[in-house]
Image (tube, rainbow, N blue to C red; front, side, top):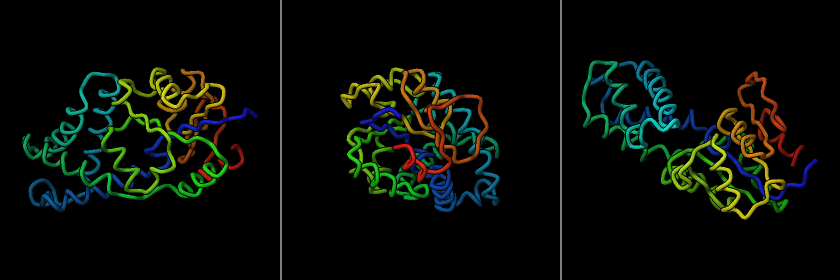
Length: 232
């Protein structure tokens, strides 16, 4: 087994329960903006439409076809259009409020805090590599009280590159003053985290929360964070 010194974590869907926190945030704005009267009485229908358009626009953003600002408000705009509401002002207000509420949610995956304590006590240098927005991601980790675990937080905005591009991993290594052979990436996303690490030549651990089937061959695979203790 390699001797690692630097551990690079993904944040959303790996440590921080993005899906649950985002759904709760959308429920908050649904109520706050009285969308049950303006849009639909069924939150779940609104939520499903949002997820559909958010996924499409995130893919376009990751490929460089749209800007971060366009992604933020147009996912709301497209969702409202599903209900025949073409209100750009409301779309931008919903987007702004959503991004204010979201980072204040605190639900982490089981064993997340426990494993960070464990790794820190073993003197690993811990870092984050995330495709999320700089301000939002920093707010998340501060609100969740995990910011003190990480030496460096590398975002796509700061590095001008995104996972799975190798450049963001190279930027992270440089920022952390880390050697590739002594570094490992931990994440839940096969494309962004695992393929990205492979593109950079970095060992990796696939956190397979959802029992995904893949032909990709990560360096290691775990089904929950507690299992990291068997590797690190």
